[in-house]
Image (cartoon, rainbow, N blue to C red; front, side, top):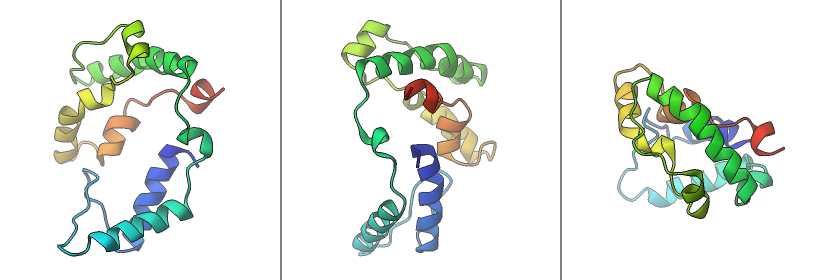
Length: 140
């Protein structure tokens, strides 16, 4: 399955195993229950694996596609919502050191909308409202 599909399925699997997630994606873990959560995570990830192509590092060409999509689509979408992304690195800087993630730059602003009930979950806020490139674009 895709990483996006995986998040929803894993959320349900963990909920069924007694580990519901809060809207911000967090899970409350009682003291001494860390191993039980780790086991539930392991079982859920094994039951619903993500396709191998998503587990591989992105190639330089894919990083270029990702950067272009973010700059042309994701960042303007965030800005239309009033979320400040800040300084955007040049394509060359990003390709040399691909650590810039627009979703991280707006996490606090997105979290405020989740807490206000305007958006259901942080995953939806960061990756659903202004999605990244479709699979057929990033994985041709």
